[in-house]
Length: 172
Image 1 (cartoon, helix red, strand yellow):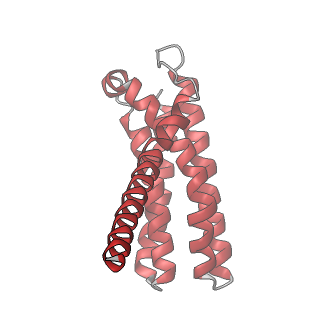
Image 2 (cartoon, rainbow, N blue to C red):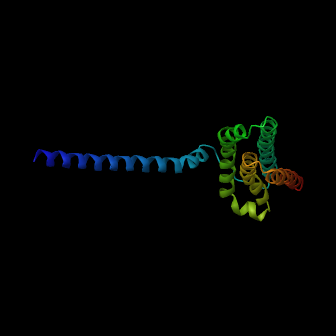
Image 3 (cartoon, helix red, strand yellow):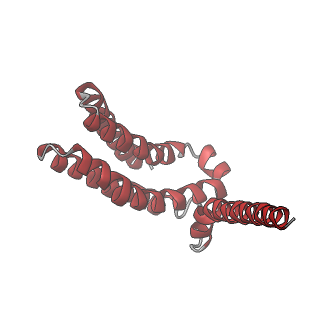
């Protein structure tokens, strides 16, 4: 009888522990889902107009160029040192958070001003900025996999993207 009682108690405790663990995990996931939205809410999201689009576009391209340049400079540094793992770590833990912070803001601006952006043919600015993450991923994978073709294609794409955004800025 005592053995039955102990078994039932252990069963109830394990179910309670499982339930508590599930709740904590769910809370963690929902907190992570809302993390990016919270950061974007803390900053005032600009309403784009004909009066401020030039300055906004210049700022976006400057941010793009700084993030782009940092990525390529660090890529060259780690590649020269034959340290593909070091570049992967840098890209994952330093560059990507810096990029995500800016991207979240520009994505919020895009969402708020979508009709203005699309009617003004400014979507390419945002697509170029979004593509930075894929350039970083491809450079990281190219180094880790020793895939020179992927590296060459990505560096060419990075050069083309920079030229495209700079040219677009001149049309405003």
